Image 1 (spheres, one colour):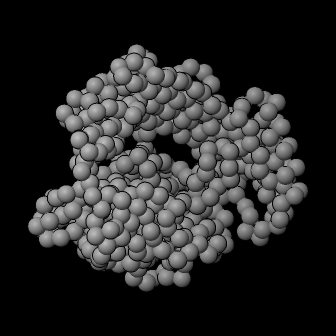
Image 2 (image 1 turned 30 degrees about the horizontal axis):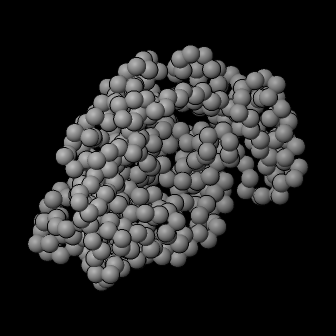
Image 3 (image 1 turned 90 degrees about the vertical axis):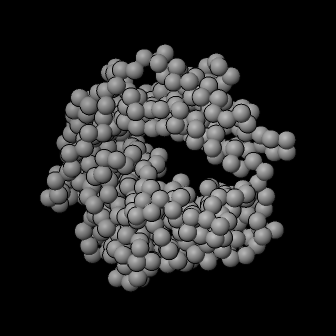
Length: 456
């Protein structure tokens, strides 16, 4: 790719994709996905640069569908010979595929893509010295944030600029350019008896919005508040989920509201359309057209315009999300929810920017209304700790005891056991602290009643 990456590069990617699709035979459907990515990462330690890397990647993925069979191939280069070979390989792979009556590429559905400004040239133009300076300032600020800070596991600046194009014989022709940058730090705090870790971050579309002091303060707060943590007693109690935890829970719920998961029998909500599956306080929307979401995108992985999909409305399950294939299988229309792993894979189905409708109370107000509860600050292994068929959930957690409406002693090394269905049903309050995080969901404080906690 030329230096630096710019939205104008999408035209070159479109040209490459057009050339591949133009070689389709009369019986074939052909789709070409072309991606170019430039990223930089600076990691510092003890006031010095520990590592600095800059990488450019580019590649193409090609799908060929003919007679209900699908062949796919990819190459991690845009060299003309490699591009030609990928099309030939996809055609060859098609011969070994099984027939799927629902196989077929996406077709334009008339939805106009949202106008989103997801690219900022400042990322590509930023001098490397300025990136190093930000990482060093993050390390200094974290160590100075609290006298109990004892060290830094890692402090880094990173950025990425991605340009992509999707073209198909069915009339899809879409392109995009996106930028992102972030600061992240993992900190250590200690007292006479224990050492605890914490993390903090600051992120945005361009470096001007990054704030080392915010990331540092968050990392120090998360580490120091857990000093002296003990295990709680086993029992049932009310939980307050921190936005960081809620966002992770929503990602798991979203994976179970995929038409693909439903078709494969990997969703406990498969037969519950139109039923109440959550508290009436729960309205869950997947909206990749929201520019506040760091996973925002005007088009999905098949080049179909993304849109606002209301999944749960006041507790009632209204819809599942679909790509073109899962929609055909279910007898519905695509929801613009195709996702894929860059140019290296075929499209799957997934939620892209989940958010709950916020309530009216801050986390402090929610905590203040509780006599005895636990604030869950973090969980471990959530994605692997949930059974996608039954919804059973068992994860490790840490947090703070809530006593008489105020945070009290820190708690660690305990397990939360429930089901996703039960958690959704038992939500008593939703906070007003909606926060978009570096994942496919926004966080917000949640109060969940009567959850089993296993400790001592």
